[in-house]
Structures are given as C-alpha cells and as structure tokens.
Image 1: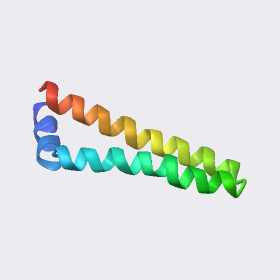
Image 2 (image 1 turned 90 degrees about the vertical axis):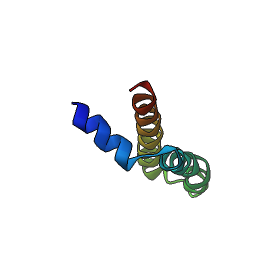
Image 3 (image 1 turned 90 degrees about the horizontal axis):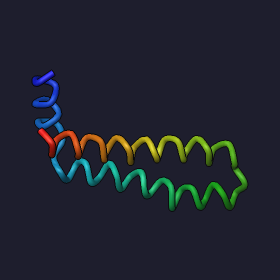
Length: 68
C-alpha cells in the first residue's frame, strides 16, 4: 500500500491535480452548455458523469496525498 502512495506522489503534483479538476469544470460549464443548446440530452448526461468523475478523482487524490 505504501508504494502505491509513493507512486501517486511521483505522478501527481498540485498542478496536475488542479488541471484535472479544471478539465472537469470546463466540461460541465462549456461543453455542457453547448450540448444543452443542441438538445443532446443523452450526451449531456454522459458528459456530466465523466466530468464529475474527473472532479471527484482529482479531489480524492489531493486529499490522499495531503493526508499521507
């Protein structure tokens, strides 16, 4: 378990985590707005799931790295 956290620390730094969260936010606000205007509900729902996953994973990795 310890080597997994060290591997995460080597891969992710604060800038990478911020970029992951910003990609999720960009997807929700910009792409979501465009899909909603085009009345593409199914694609909008898929986009929301993916974007919220990016945001939650980014926050979770940030918390894990700061706690350890």
